[in-house]
Image 1 (cartoon, one colour):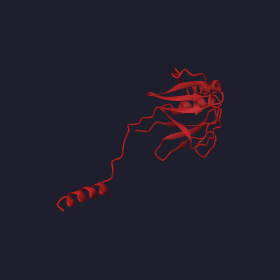
Image 2 (image 1 turned 180 degrees about the vertical axis):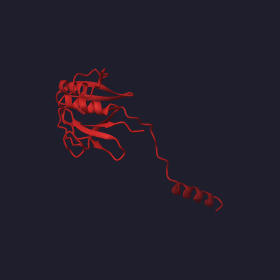
Image 3 (image 1 turned 135 degrees about the vertical axis):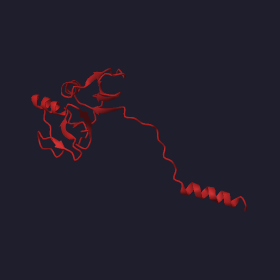
Image 4 (image 1 turned 120 degrees about the vertical axis):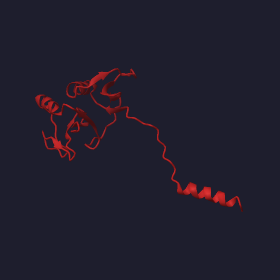
Length: 151
């Protein structure tokens, strides 16, 4: 009987104290997109977004890598031929301190952009003051571009 009380107390504590969640220290590494025409997509990401093409460490043909800064990458993969379903909620979001200059760059190069609802050539301003637009790459992937936070 004298062992039953401590045992029941430990059992109750295990039930009452929630288990600690496991954290694995994940950080974002890369985003991969399935593309139909690798050369066309590479040209878009280099010329429209100005991303730096980096070495494809897999050395597999049909794949190109780009730096997103701070060790983050974008991988364009043209070797998988399955259909990809795309909608605006699935997008890449980028931030630039040169937001207004980027808008001028898009307009000078006749690149279509819109706000979230889809109104052409319109910049959305979020409740927190961040300006944002949406555009699509050659395969229809959505790209959100944001201004930096006002301090």
